[in-house]
Amino acid sequence: MKKGKMFFSLVVFIALLGSRALANGLNLNSLGTKALTMGGAFVGLADDFSALYWNPAGMAQFNKKYFGFYGTDIIPSGTYQFGLVDAKTETKHYIAGMAAYFHPVSENVVAGIGVYVPAGLGGNWDGADFASIANNNPNLEWKSKIGLITIAPALAFKINEQFSIGVALNINYGIFDIAMHAGSADTPLGKIDLGQYEESMKGWGYGATFGVLVKPNETFSIGATFRTPCKVKFSGDATMSNLSLLGLTPTSDLEREITWPMWLAGGVAFKPIPNLTLTGDLQWTQWSKIEEIEADYKDITWQILMAASGDDIMAMYWEDKVQIRFGAEYRINTIAIRGGYYLDPSPAPDETMNVLLPNYDFNVFTLGLGYELNGLQIDLGIEYLIGKERSTPYEVVPLFFPPFIEIQTEYGTAMPGTYKMNIIVPNVSISYKF
Image (cartoon, rainbow, N blue to C red):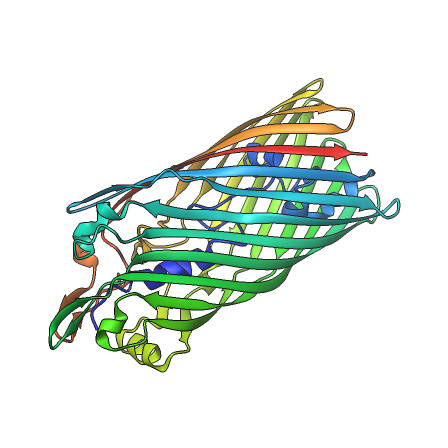
């Protein structure tokens, strides 16, 4: 069976670029406008409602009831070029956000709960741009979309005035959809176009976040956060629209078990003068644990076909990565001016590049304003991600010679071409202490 292995790599990309919000691609890299506009360097500060995500120990600083809301819009702009293909992503808006409430139980204990979207990502291309590599069919959909929703009850304990700890339970619900060309099959009667490939899956997973915050004085604080691995069992169905032309069932139920890796972060916050706060973080994700992902197709025919083509197992070859983040805030009475920068390296090598969720090394710049009055806080911000151009050459992609001979290379799932991506992320937060 001759068909592109690429669409299985897309499924894995979508599933994995989620719950840490630290993976690369069209994802949300920060939560909370204050944190985001300080470059996401927030683990050592964690002094607003987004502490639930960054460092739950920061919740111990809240001595009043506290509610916060955060909304963001991820707007990607990407291009892809290869041969006759000269494509540009359609303008789409991927909405994400967070809502959290905190309640001091006693002088030293604060309880909280939050609901947030750590990932809002996807890609949407005009099928006509890809007709030349899809059997001249301009009507196929080429798109991906994901949303991951986390429900997180949490507790924070102030051990003393200098030392706090916190923990949050992460209940993750993931949904995603993808669609693209399914490739073609060689038969005794000739080549058959397999048409549209679509997959829709949902899944649950559970994990926890642990945080520590140390403030030896009013000018300096240091924090650390550990987020556990989280295994999610996804289930749904996969469809190839023209598979019935081979006398086969066009739809199969499907399951995958995917484990998001461990996340470790450390950060510091320093006030050299009363109105200026400087922050810095190192955030590490153990992506090297992601090597091969197995697909469990429930239809026996699909099992045989996918095993024969090797598409039931996907090799990822991801690598551990560290994000370096810096931020600053300067306050003028009730106004806060913020800025930041972080480097977001891609965890995926060229072997897994594709058009729906390509990976880039991003340089990210952030800017924002805040206004505070009588417990009400309003924050506005923008994040601009500049992706480094990536290119996968044609000669490293597997070559197929009918009927059964395939020359393999180490770039087994690559889609050749040149990729570019920039992302704009406007956002707003509103919070109130009472």
